[in-house]
Length: 133
Ligand SMILES: [Zn+2]
Image 1 (cartoon, rainbow, N blue to C red):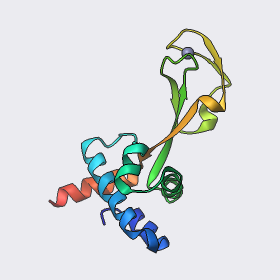
Image 2: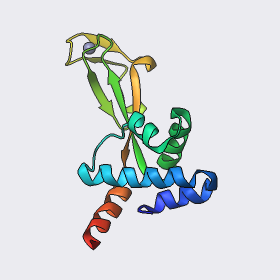
Image 3: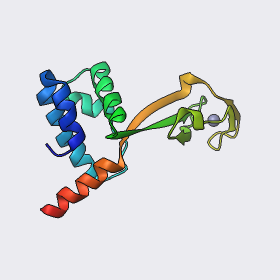
Image 4: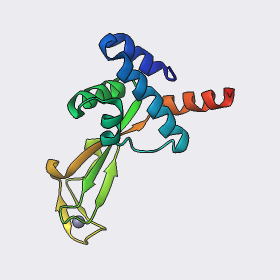
């Protein structure tokens, strides 16, 4: 096991031992390539062999214990891509002028997507790990 947080998670979910182990290994790989990479939930779901809702529940737990941070993406309703990103939902303004399509958009839950990135704690552990090799 690479990360302390995943070890804790494994203790809390003994039935998901193998899944958490694969999750840990995969996240370690991703961080080594790009410490700020956004976790690709579909790729993770296939690899760890957990359905999306079960995986999402684990990811939320990992946020709660400090292994991951959330990132929120506000997608342009005109399909022009991500018009704003924020660490917290409350960081978004009620409306914004979209630099993608040039129009003004009002905040709408339906256009918000949440993703996960490794926390500083994981990044530090990954650095220490690669320093030992
Ligand atoms: Zn727009």
